[in-house]
Length: 222
Image (cartoon, rainbow, N blue to C red; front, side):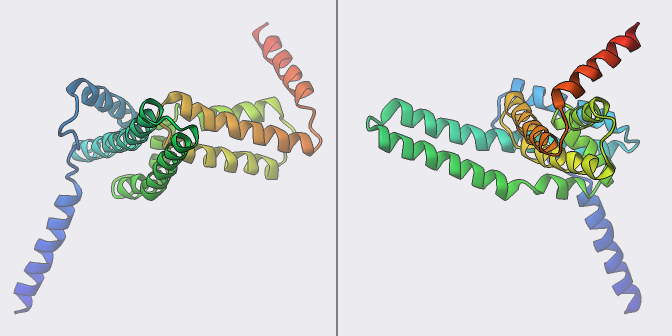
């Protein structure tokens, strides 16, 4: 009896492990050229992780690609509703209410699904690798903006550096759900403005800091 129970437990365990390695690509009914572009984009991110396990690499690639598909579906539904309002609704007030409703629904759907990506990737990747995926989906803006801020103002305290990083991480979370590259950059630019205002309030002369930074760069080139 104990042997049968042990065998059953092992079968369940191996079955769960096997299913965890299988992530189906949600490409049904989608334009083949669009699917190909998303696969290529997702694969580029996976290549940067340098995973040795082929099954794991495929699963992660499909998770990322499915995320892009989902985001496209959510934003496209919103855009279609807004276009309908612009084309078919005469009353300005009524038209705006439909547009506002479409955007609220979009934002609600984005929030509803936001944490699914990290949860799915956590089955295969470490926290550091998940961060690398997020960076890959947002053009590496977090590291680039963070390093630029530290280079521009070398005198930042540890507390100030941490706050800058926290806001960039928050910007990245929003940017990951943006519809396109313009939307992704928008969120980092917005949080850069918040950071600059905060640093100015703490007594930093950002124009002076920026000018000195540019001078250091020019001197280094010479």
